[in-house]
Length: 277
Image (cartoon, rainbow, N blue to C red; front, top):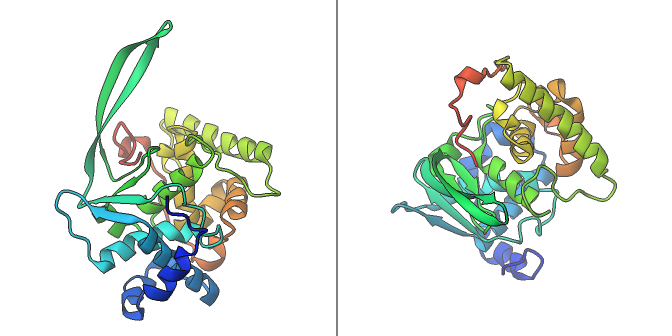
């Protein structure tokens, strides 16, 4: 398994740095607005290591050029710039589809002490973080993500991967020294319950009600808003925002402008809420 802690990242940075001309293709994104020189350097280095250490493979005949790979890497690495290069050392593959893709899943229902009914389902997704290894991404949706609309497929799936470092994606990733698990749970439970109540009552939601699907999706959706619409998240759920500042070791509200937004209504969304997994 490739590890971000071994000497290879230094070799990647020495032998395969991102060229200035290639970096210019993403440097103007609204998502990266306000990064200071040190943060930009860290992001560029993380993206270089990501590109050199992950197998990024096109599916359905998709051919990925350097710019497309950087579109993916830069967004995946933004949450990681202060988390260290070992934050994603437990998986090594990204599978990229041209657009949204069909995902089949199978779940089992226990009957007594035996596995009984088998339930199969199909979903159209823009991204998926698989517990058995890779993340799956729609290139079209990755290109539409960095525009400060609260929707960012790569960040959503990276949040799931960070969450999975504690085992399953249950909304509580391994926390840093000094962070309190009981406080994290209380803060996110309160926000989750509030969103679930709004969604169940068909009230307008300040945050995409897909966050009320389960605790894992709550953390991933809040992570999207943290990096894309931080002022909205800070206004609506300030305790959540403070927890995410401590976890990601970033304060996007400091660097990004305040954006206008409209509430999300449950009827605006399909029955499965959104094309994420």
